[in-house]
Amino acid sequence: MVDTPGVRLDRFVTDRCAGLSRARVQKLIELGLVRVSGRPAKPGYRLSAGDIVSVTVPPHAPIELKPESIPLTVVHEDDAIIVVDKPAGMTVHPAAGNREHTLVNALLAHCPALAASVTPERPGIVHRLDKDTSGLMVIAKADAAFKGLIAQFLSRRIFKRYTALVTGHVSPEKGIIEAPIGRDPSNRKRMAVVLGGKESRTRYNVTEYMDGYSLLEITLETGRTHQIRVHLAAIGHPVAGDRVYGGKSPLFKRQFLHASALGFEHPVTGESCQFFSPLPDDLRQGLETLRRKAAG
Image (cartoon, rainbow, N blue to C red; front, side):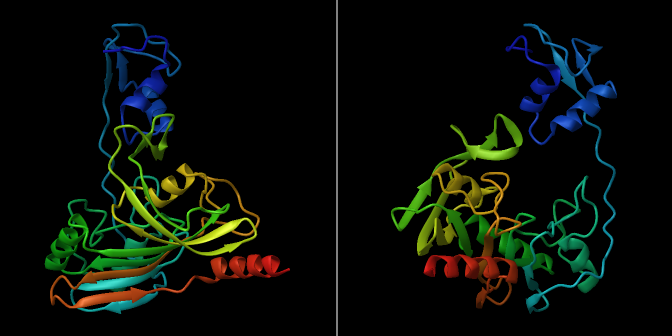
């Protein structure tokens, strides 16, 4: 039942239905799948107090997972797991608007047998990186490995370190950002620090200052969507090149965020595993440009 009269129907549904973009909501309205007190309405219809809004969301067509011969940088592989260095620009798994050219498509061509997942389009996937974040990921090939890795993530026993370049002079040099994260109420495609959001903790350490930027090493105590990017933007130091939470950069075509170290207990053998990844060329070259400028 509507408790905010005067709000547009498409805006009301988008705000109430997490996971539905405004464009998708407008399409549902166009198809007559959103009704106000039992009747179809237009996206711009202004709701009245007491209106009852019903939404029918048809299931997406099943996504066919196609193996694709996309080059992969494999850091480690055995019968149970595979560790890869994901390039920037690659989405981790297929979704409704992005069904091909993902990491999963590439993995299936490399090793067709991946662990089963609760979500069929995410075989073997136990954690994710944003499309434009590069770096290390571990994927489960065996079902036992999948369960073991998930257990380690849930108990926060997986070590992940990131390298990030942010705008401005971060002070103090070491610190913890602790602020709850949830959907941005003004833009459902973004995350934000919000009252009532999920507990989120980010540790940072400044390793270098240069010409209006700070280079950070970051470790996560929680793993929320866009956590690093949201927390750094919240303290006034967005990740360089982050167009969603900061702004465009003259030096970087994407956000300067790289998963540089990954550590965990092998889910089958119990062996301690540690992996490291150097900065990719696009980030390294931009960083060198900044250092030369700072040196005068």
